[in-house]
Image (cartoon, rainbow, N blue to C red; front, side):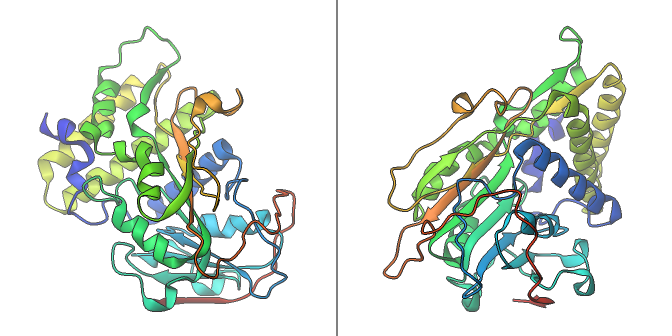
Length: 345
């Protein structure tokens, strides 16, 4: 079946390939809480958060912000008010301006287009998540270069995404025959289309960042079905987008594959691919990469492959010392609001 062998290569050159309606918004919000359950953070604890005392306030950007749920949940981890800006090519999934906290702003911007001049060097932290289908032809460099331009000297990037190369089929009965899920596994691996995720530390460092590291975070076994169902919902949206673009045979093949997987999943089978890579770079320190073998037993990936990726800018002539003061207490209260609007950049 050509569709299965092509996998997510079908997304290349076709723009945004997932849905924008209420069901997609629900899926994105569900996905956020499943990820938070796995990661146990929004910002990686190794990213230092300075006490700015509001002058100037910490500025954080979330690229491809979707429903804005990450930005809305983030303040509970911050020690004081921060300016939180979300960017997306389509704002229909985000709440209207009237419903946003005053410190959260969402902007219409295609992250594959040039960075507007007024955003250059503006942010202390840039966050990205789940851009696996946004990245075109397995090349994340254009997005990385844009994130670099948006950061202040000494700023941090955190990129959370799926580890498709290590995806596998989880089975309550290890001996169960799962031909449909095996075909789905072949589809999502997409002949190596997403292998760049595991190379992000090196790619970041070749594009101006320092001390990039890769951490892996696995999903709890009892949530394997929830993650698996969410992945099938994503596949349904992808098939729907193919159908809208006139790729009817490909869409039909994926819908049939989903139906076969649903029938096969009755004895408890799920596709596990939720490891998120996250990278951070600390200026002036030696680069390192942390894999799942170096994490505690609690955080090791069992059935999944998630990892966040982090990186920091090389210090410039007037770097902002993000390590001067740390505020990592996850119990800190939510910061007050600052500003509110929806705009184009």
